[in-house]
Length: 106
Image (cartoon, rainbow, N blue to C red; front, top):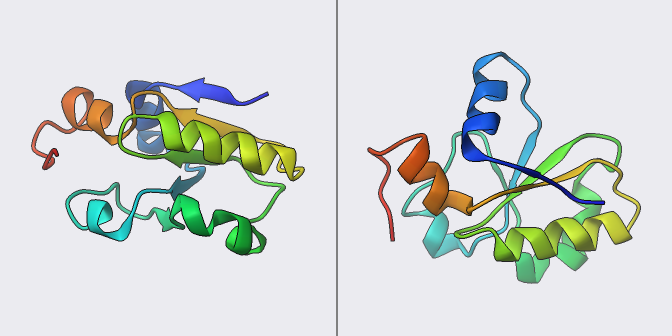
């Protein structure tokens, strides 16, 4: 079952040194506007062919613009035996409004 995490919860974990893999599934042009430092970027439409680049044993937080594509990505990876999938609720839009108001929004 894919777990949800809020931007504030993720920021708290990152600040405490607990850093899961952050998988950003947005398109390259979206990533160019704003991103969380250190993300792994695999666009959703490439995920099926590139899932082998990810470790199925580690926790992965999926990120997109509003949380819909990332939820799909997390569910897809979970169906491929990735055991620790998390979705960022509200995506980058929520991150920018709740955690980093200086971040560019689109």
